Structures are given as C-alpha cells and as structure tokens.
Length: 343
Image (cartoon, rainbow, N blue to C red):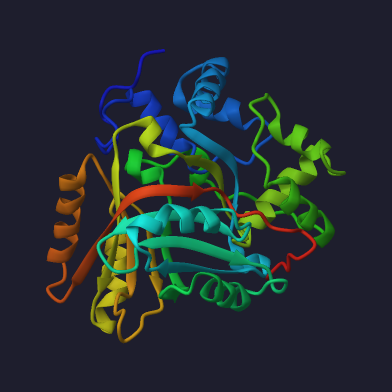
C-alpha cells in the first residue's frame, strides 16, 4: 500500500527513511496493550502484518531496533536511580567506561564533551544489596575521580514518538482503557516477564505469558494496571538512532531562575525534537537544573533548537554536552524478589 501523502506531522528529521517507516517509528514508542499488537499497528500503518514483522526483523538484525519491551519507572518499583557525571582523562576514558559498563547497575554510559564531567552514566539500584548510596560510594573508592550525583526530581517528558511524528497520536493512545483489579503476585510475575522482548509473532503476550504461570489475558490486564499506576512508562522500542538514519543528539543542561523553570520545562517538553526533559538536583558549583535531550539532522540543527529555546527566556543559561561515544545503552533489569510495588 502506498505511503500517505505528506500531511502528516512528520518532523523532517529522518528524511532518509520513507514516510511509512517514520510513522512506524513513532508508533513503536508506545504499543497497544492488546492480544495482537502487531496486527493493530499494521492496520493503523496501512500495511500487511507480514510486511511489518519483516521490517522489524530486519531492523533487529541491523541493530537499528535494540529492544521492544516494557520500560519501567524505577522509583515505582522501589528502586533508586541517578545520573552520574565523572571527570576522566580522555586517554583513560575507554578503560574506565568499559569497567563501568560491566556493572549490572549501569544501563546507559556515554562519553560527552562540554564540561569537566565527561563520562556520564545512569545507575539504578534496589532498596538494598547494594543501595544507590553504597553504589556511588563504591565508584568513588574504586576510581578516585571527581564525580557528581544528579537525582531526577521531576519528569516532564520521556518519549521518542514526537521526534519522528509530531501529529496525531496512534488511536490506542487516545482511548481510555478500562482497568481491571489485578492481584499483587500476578503484577510481580508480570514485572519479571515483561523485561523480555516482545516476540515477533501473532500473539506475543501469549508466548510471554507461557514463560511463567500466567494466561495471556492475565498478562495483558497486569500490563494495563501497571501502566495505569505509572509503574510501566510505556511498552515500546529502544532504538539505535544512528543505525536508522543520520541523527545528531545533544544533552543540553539549563540554568534558570526558580520561578521560570516550570514554564520553560513544559515549553521544552512540547518541542517535537526533544525526547527527554527532566529536572535534577543542582549544586553551588553545578547550577544546571534542567536537562533536555535534543535531536537534529546535524550539530547545527541542534544548535538552532537550543537557540530557539534560549530565546523564550532571557534569563536562560545553557551548556550543550555533545555525545562523543556510546559505551552502553540497555534497559535496566529488575529483580522481582527485590521489587517493592509503589501505590
């Protein structure tokens, strides 16, 4: 079936991909929680299910799609997470980053330039063994490098959907789903099962449910309940954007007067080229309060978006931290025996 005419809310970021591929990437950000999600996506996309699954299999093979699975809110599982910036010498970055990437508590690990803290990684720990504070102390002891701990204090946006398509959301995200009560033991089992990738099969949740003791309907109901409680942020893809298209991204940090932060953050979160926007704690020698991840066709394109945001507040100061190298990017793994479900 031919692509839709260019009406379409596409952001123009991934022009090397067809319009249909760009729309698919947006849909993969948050999939429908139904027995046959691939059929639903293919129907909305206007292609056959076999064509959709072939395309996804090809993207998996090319490492353009790394995972399609549930993404959890660590705090709502009783875990603690933080972003750590560490100051390392460039000639020792690979060695230190390699050691950090081996840690099960680390999910993302990047080398960035723009300030003295150039090695950035996320650290996620259970309530104990080890706690987050213990893990940070161990890193200080092991590497003896200047580091800064930056806890998230407020989320404004975590979504790649608008990066590809700034138009109407998929139909399944526009409808309010009825939520059935689900027992705690089923929810905990679902947390374990949903850390695996969705199979590229007609009924992926049926296959996943059989890996435990749940039925397909129990797993789907548990997903809906977990998402309703914001324990699951989304069920969708983790993309390797450079494998899909030529895209530059930058983590830009901002310092603003306290009274301006909320309005500035909500404006930034509405920008289609921004996938992440959140507030973190700041320090006297690190005044940056707000963090945005910006995507552009190239560095100049990203800089134009930064300038556009800066113009919206005359008091805004910013510091762009450009990605030099990726060492690790993988979803956090949670131990169901250590999970504490939050209300």
